[in-house]
Image (cartoon, rainbow over all chains, first blue to last red; front, side, top):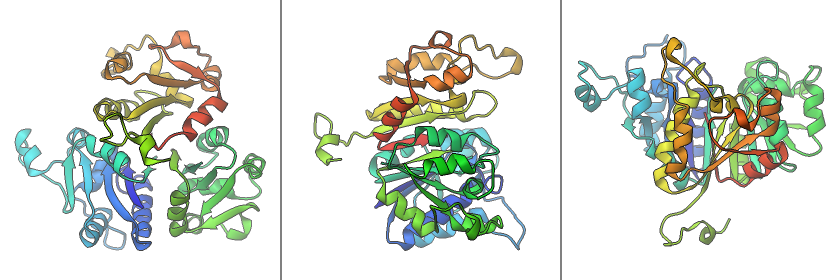
Length: 130
Length: 101
Length: 132
């Protein structure tokens, strides 16, 4: 089956991102396909490249980046939610007159349409939130 | 039939309550994250869940139980413990997932 | 569900039943506002969309929201604009209204008030349920 995953919360604050990650990993291990992982609300904060969590704990952002690389996953961060919360790629930084960008590897910024498309194209849409 | 997930403790939010109100007979409920506390014997929420066990299929996520020091032996009878693989299988077996947050 | 049932008239794109489930009050958290933003963008995809308001979600539709003094944007008028986007199926759970001492007259837009049993059936028919 093809899965669409929606992550509504940021790293560490809630378990949502962890649960979504574990679910995604398990689905891949079972041979399923992940159509897209979409990050909304504070979920966009999973995509910051500036996180420096303690070494003895999981690095949530890096974990997503690695999984994306290994399995060619499409990790999409909602542009509206990202701009609100200060998650920017180079393009958005330029467009908004910011002197820095902070989007982590493996993530891309795009519109809410990508979430709807995932709902349409995937066989199952699973939501992780607070 | 839907798979319903509940991720909050029944003592924290009304999510489990709302879920039980809205879950159609024959559908499934999977307790995850803090929702796993709703699966434990001896709590004030026990009767709520036990009342549903005739009409609904009940599951609890093992890794979340273990994380919280909740022992499988203390899970209410009739609630099946599954792992993330089981969670995935449940989503495949149902037409859609409703996340009660 | 057979693929043919989900095809639109032109036989082109798939049409799925999308339900946006709203259970949280407005302003205390961002979910109500950002969920509405998904509905508006989603309207362009011509899916079979409905909105369900359950528990504190019914408060999103309360009349008379005046947000000046909390310094936030009042987005409740947007619910009235939904029909312009062909989003017309707004279902509110009777029990949630009753528990909060509200009636359909207290709401900013015309809705279909349904019983828990009816809401249960509606949810069970969905292909995609988005919760925020």
